[in-house]
Image 1: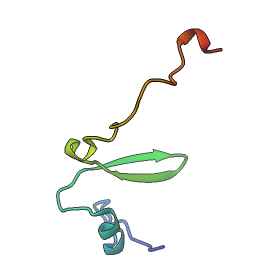
Image 2: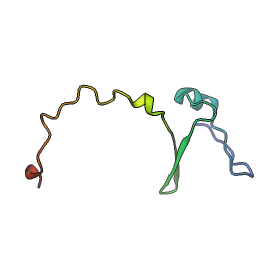
Image 3: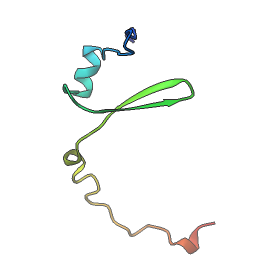
Length: 69
């Protein structure tokens, strides 16, 4: 775990080991979410990277609304 400091302009530097693991690039967008006092930074992925994530999914075992409680 690495500690970073918030600058006077409220900026932080993402440590190099985290940047490399997440493959962050300069100029890449990051979503910032605060929940229960914890800040989450989520890299925004290009739409091209999500292509094919649903490949092979079938609707065979999808429940009908009548089956729900």
